[in-house]
Length: 250
Picture 1 (tube, rainbow, N blue to C red):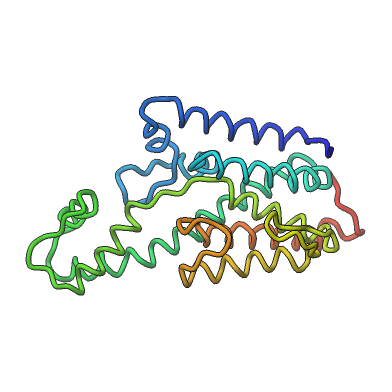
Picture 2 (picture 1 turned 90 degrees about the vertical axis):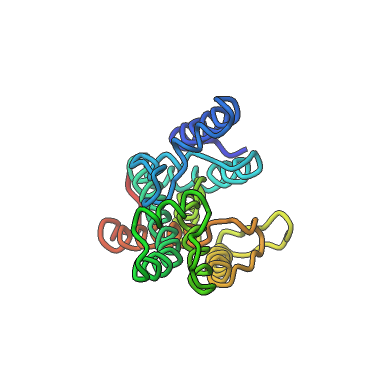
């Protein structure tokens, strides 16, 4: 069995502890309210959620698959990069995942916000509709449809290490392009240089069509894309500048 590296082990422990806290502290909402990533315009948003949401998960299966992927791909990447560079890659990918997903949320949120405020509704009234889910009387059907998209974005939350792990996965693929990988439900070996871009492409398609292929429909697909792209660009930059002797230093 492949040896688990120290940093990966500690990350897995933190994720498990946060999951246990979510399941045992209060009524299950306390940890979500404090540590899940809320929409920045929401009263529930806190600055630390930009990082803490990376250690939160929506259920045991979500946690299990993410931690399995972290162990499987994170160990080899940490061994090649060392602790500090691995952590920089991991959290940079997580932050990129937040930015990409929030960009998608704002794409849905801003049209309704702008349209309603231009109609004479005040910012406080708009905020009240977002928090209560109840619209003011006299609004047009088109405006209500826009508000529904704004409401979904405003009340969305992000949890999970998937964005971080997609960055690690991209790094693994660049380091080991000919490594053969397999999906659990498709036991056909595929080289990493084809497998990983294929996974990212499916996430892009899902983000713009809403069609889910291998994950739940509420998956933050843009977060996956953002994490993977950040992992790719970091590794590309390091290989081009710091590691110009065909080696990966600690």
